[in-house]
Length: 121
Image (cartoon, rainbow, N blue to C red; front, side):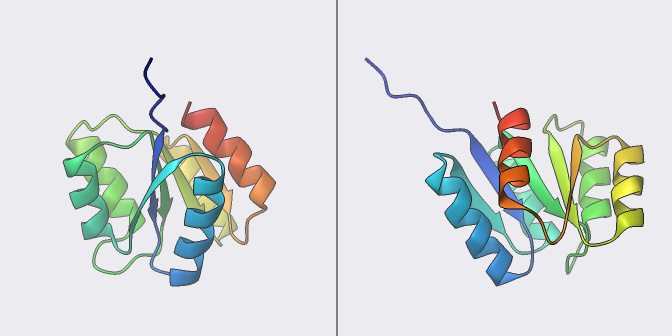
Protein backbone atom coordinates (compact mmCIF):
# COMPACT_ATOMS: atom_id res chain seq x y z
CA UNK A 1 0.00 0.00 0.00
CA UNK A 2 1.47 3.34 -1.02
CA UNK A 3 1.29 6.57 0.91
CA UNK A 4 -0.20 9.47 -1.08
CA UNK A 5 2.35 12.08 -2.11
CA UNK A 6 1.37 15.57 -0.92
CA UNK A 7 0.80 18.24 -3.53
CA UNK A 8 3.81 20.52 -3.81
CA UNK A 9 3.37 24.28 -3.56
CA UNK A 10 6.08 26.72 -4.65
CA UNK A 11 5.95 29.94 -2.62
CA UNK A 12 7.69 32.81 -4.39
CA UNK A 13 8.13 35.85 -2.16
CA UNK A 14 11.13 37.91 -1.09
CA UNK A 15 9.75 38.61 2.40
CA UNK A 16 11.18 36.04 4.86
CA UNK A 17 8.21 36.51 7.22
CA UNK A 18 5.74 35.65 4.47
CA UNK A 19 7.88 32.71 3.38
CA UNK A 20 7.91 31.37 6.95
CA UNK A 21 4.20 31.93 7.50
CA UNK A 22 3.16 30.27 4.24
CA UNK A 23 5.57 27.38 4.75
CA UNK A 24 4.21 26.76 8.25
CA UNK A 25 0.53 27.07 7.32
CA UNK A 26 0.78 24.94 4.18
CA UNK A 27 2.92 22.17 5.70
CA UNK A 28 0.48 21.94 8.61
CA UNK A 29 -2.23 21.33 6.00
CA UNK A 30 -0.19 18.47 4.53
CA UNK A 31 1.33 20.17 1.49
CA UNK A 32 4.96 19.88 0.47
CA UNK A 33 6.37 23.41 0.22
CA UNK A 34 9.37 24.85 -1.60
CA UNK A 35 10.32 28.51 -1.30
CA UNK A 36 12.01 30.88 -3.75
CA UNK A 37 13.01 34.42 -2.83
CA UNK A 38 13.17 35.96 -6.31
CA UNK A 39 11.97 35.41 -9.86
CA UNK A 40 15.15 33.75 -11.11
CA UNK A 41 15.08 31.26 -8.23
CA UNK A 42 11.42 30.57 -8.98
CA UNK A 43 12.15 29.70 -12.62
CA UNK A 44 15.02 27.45 -11.54
CA UNK A 45 12.79 25.66 -9.02
CA UNK A 46 10.03 25.16 -11.60
CA UNK A 47 12.54 23.85 -14.17
CA UNK A 48 13.74 21.27 -11.60
CA UNK A 49 10.21 20.05 -10.80
CA UNK A 50 6.90 21.62 -11.80
CA UNK A 51 4.82 22.07 -8.63
CA UNK A 52 1.06 21.59 -8.29
CA UNK A 53 0.67 25.33 -7.67
CA UNK A 54 2.79 28.50 -7.63
CA UNK A 55 1.97 31.27 -5.14
CA UNK A 56 3.71 34.17 -6.85
CA UNK A 57 4.41 37.62 -5.43
CA UNK A 58 4.45 40.25 -8.17
CA UNK A 59 7.08 42.54 -6.62
CA UNK A 60 10.24 40.45 -6.62
CA UNK A 61 13.95 41.21 -6.97
CA UNK A 62 15.99 40.11 -10.01
CA UNK A 63 12.90 39.18 -12.05
CA UNK A 64 9.42 40.33 -11.04
CA UNK A 65 6.31 38.18 -10.94
CA UNK A 66 5.00 39.58 -14.23
CA UNK A 67 8.19 38.46 -16.00
CA UNK A 68 8.12 35.05 -14.30
CA UNK A 69 4.57 34.53 -15.53
CA UNK A 70 5.47 35.61 -19.06
CA UNK A 71 8.49 33.28 -19.22
CA UNK A 72 6.35 30.35 -18.07
CA UNK A 73 3.79 31.19 -20.77
CA UNK A 74 6.54 31.51 -23.40
CA UNK A 75 8.03 28.15 -22.34
CA UNK A 76 4.54 26.58 -22.31
CA UNK A 77 4.95 25.42 -18.72
CA UNK A 78 1.58 24.21 -17.49
CA UNK A 79 1.31 25.22 -13.84
CA UNK A 80 -1.49 26.99 -11.97
CA UNK A 81 -0.42 30.40 -10.68
CA UNK A 82 -2.03 32.44 -7.93
CA UNK A 83 -0.50 35.88 -7.58
CA UNK A 84 -0.03 37.53 -4.20
CA UNK A 85 -0.03 41.31 -4.17
CA UNK A 86 -0.92 44.31 -2.06
CA UNK A 87 -2.15 46.39 -5.00
CA UNK A 88 -5.81 46.25 -6.03
CA UNK A 89 -4.96 47.24 -9.61
CA UNK A 90 -2.35 44.47 -9.74
CA UNK A 91 -5.01 41.94 -8.71
CA UNK A 92 -7.23 43.10 -11.59
CA UNK A 93 -4.32 43.00 -14.04
CA UNK A 94 -3.25 39.54 -12.89
CA UNK A 95 -6.78 38.29 -13.41
CA UNK A 96 -6.78 39.83 -16.89
CA UNK A 97 -3.51 38.04 -17.71
CA UNK A 98 -5.19 34.72 -17.10
CA UNK A 99 -3.59 33.45 -13.93
CA UNK A 100 -5.77 31.13 -11.92
CA UNK A 101 -6.30 33.47 -9.00
CA UNK A 102 -5.19 36.44 -6.99
CA UNK A 103 -4.58 36.66 -3.28
CA UNK A 104 -4.62 40.19 -1.88
CA UNK A 105 -2.05 41.02 0.80
CA UNK A 106 -2.44 41.04 3.70
CA UNK A 107 -4.29 37.78 3.24
CA UNK A 108 -6.70 35.82 5.34
CA UNK A 109 -5.32 32.34 6.11
CA UNK A 110 -8.68 30.63 5.59
CA UNK A 111 -9.05 32.29 2.17
CA UNK A 112 -5.49 31.24 1.31
CA UNK A 113 -6.24 27.62 2.20
CA UNK A 114 -9.43 27.62 0.12
CA UNK A 115 -7.53 28.93 -2.91
CA UNK A 116 -4.70 26.44 -2.45
CA UNK A 117 -7.13 23.52 -2.05
CA UNK A 118 -8.98 24.61 -5.19
CA UNK A 119 -5.91 24.72 -7.43
CA UNK A 120 -3.51 22.19 -5.89
CA UNK A 121 -5.91 19.24 -5.83
